[in-house]
Image 1 (tube, rainbow, N blue to C red):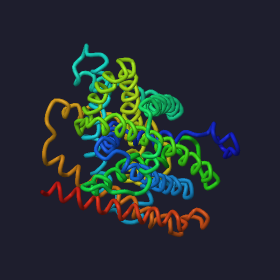
Image 2: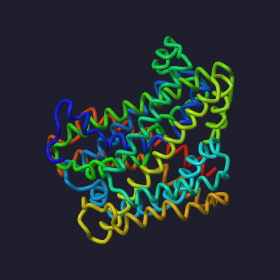
Image 3: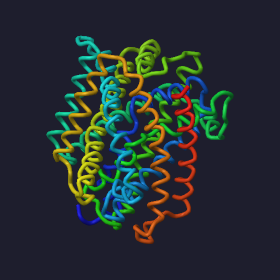
Image 4: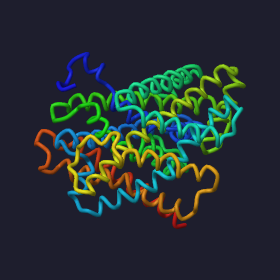
Amino acid sequence: MTVPPTGLGRLKALGPGLVVAATGVGAGDLVATLIAGSRFGYDLLWAAVIGCLVKIALSEGSARYHLATGSTILAGWRSLGRWTSWYFGIYVLIWGFIYGATAMSATALPLAAMFPVLPLRAWAVLAGLLGLAFVWLNRYQAFEAVMKVLVATMFVIMVGLAILVAPNLPDLLGGMTGRLPDGSLFYTLGLIGGVGGTITTAAYGYWAQAKGWRGPAWLPMMRFDNTIAYAVTGLFVVSMLIVGAELLHSAGIALEDSDRGLLGLSDVLAARFGPMVATLFLVGFLATAFSSVLGVWQGMSLFFADWWYQLRGADAGGDHEGSGAYRFYLLWLTFPPMLLLFADRPLLLVVIYGAFGALFMPFLAVTLLLLNNSQRLPAGARNGWLANGALAGSALLFAVLATQQIAALLG
């Protein structure tokens, strides 16, 4: 696609935004919003909505740099100093090692619940191998098509579930007033920061390039795509908060604060609405978790390949899909993390992962402020007051979260 579409043609061209949004919303987001609804009712609805708006600003800023410069966000970081490349390289290797195990385990939970013929670890290994095989054998077009099916599945099931539990509309609207219940401050900040993805928001530009969107002419299409995608994400997240508020908060039911808590919700749904509804929820849970597997396996492999080839002096913005570095990271995401499925996570690795992870989002927000206000971008593609305000607010929010998380790790 070489000419940006207009009118209704934009709807047919949607894709990279849905991919980044589906990748960013995983089992952890389901748990976070369910727990928020079960503990505080609708009081934190506003925080979930702001979380989606923050991610719109971050993903849009990243993709705008790609389209406006013809380069990549990694090249932009390198222009700020070589230390950024080493920071990203160390982080992405540690992150991939731990996230690979997390994503495979989350996908295995609904599979083991629906098909108990295999143990959880076996399903986790199979989920990783399936993700590896699909991404290895297919290019972006097939990947996007499957991601759209997964997005539709998770969206229809979770929104349908919210309608089924019959939300209280006055209470729902009251949740947008900015109330902050006692003891909810850092939980609220975490909800804003976590909803809709972290490092995967920076992969949006790579998916836009893989789609064939290149040059400033594609900026309006990218912004439309990004906004629609996070509107879908917002409805999805609000739906899960409704389920938590109506089904759990009103009945005083507490779920386990981990991915396994979603199986607890399945039991509650079975008791309230019957086994068919519980099974449909597990299907939606599976679509949510596996979309993150596919999205990370594909998008972060593109990210890593760009880092590797730039480190070796290649120009940024090349087509690295299927390259040697791309396939290396696919294998890295799949096989080494399987060791963590059979053992507790090493303490030192968890501490390093947590520290690097806490610093990534303020790093992304601050660097987007620097890069997208610079003369590297054409004047019409630079940040406006709204983008600067959103990115500055994001940087402050993530700096507070980083301080909190690192303090907890040191403690």
